[in-house]
Image (cartoon, rainbow, N blue to C red; front, side, top):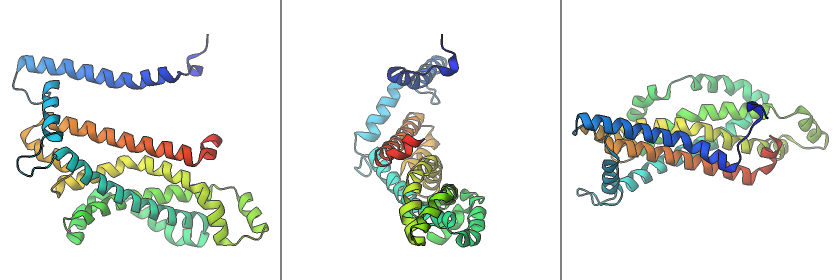
Length: 271
């Protein structure tokens, strides 16, 4: 009999074990909801599943009486647009600066201390400054995401670039490669799959900064809607929105993981 530490689940087993915690959470919620509603039929803290269905139908499939728009899809589009812009800008800056600081010692000596200092500044602490400087429009929300995750991406990619074996650099120099050729043909290809991994790890923080910015100053977005209805204790709207945000984050992470395995199979095989 195999020891527990050596046992692995098959494809079906992995799916079953992955879904099991969610099933347990749903069962616990239903039991707690039934208990609270039995004691107080007007309880809003844990609404029943029928209330969720009604709220989803109202938010996603019925036009708003005030604007005529489908609120869930409008909020989703607004939030995903801000998230995509913020993460894309952060990834571009992180890639360029991370490679420069990791591959060029002179650049690392000049920029790395600044990046380290910026990474220690709580991004939410500068949110009022961003609203003062950039106003209450879209730019401030995107900038918050950029400020929040770019230092992490730079430091991670800098470390990955520094980990490239010195033998590979020496061999390219022996073959006559200059600095730019070494960066473009050696460092860049090896750092790109690690960039995707770093972006995946930073998505949670990006969502946090996005929701915080939308909660304070926005007229649409998933975070805006959650904080708008909280004053009415509308848990039948808040909880589905939280689940929807979780699903979107999981879908983005899954897509990035699949793209990385498809585009850089050598990296995952080596690992």
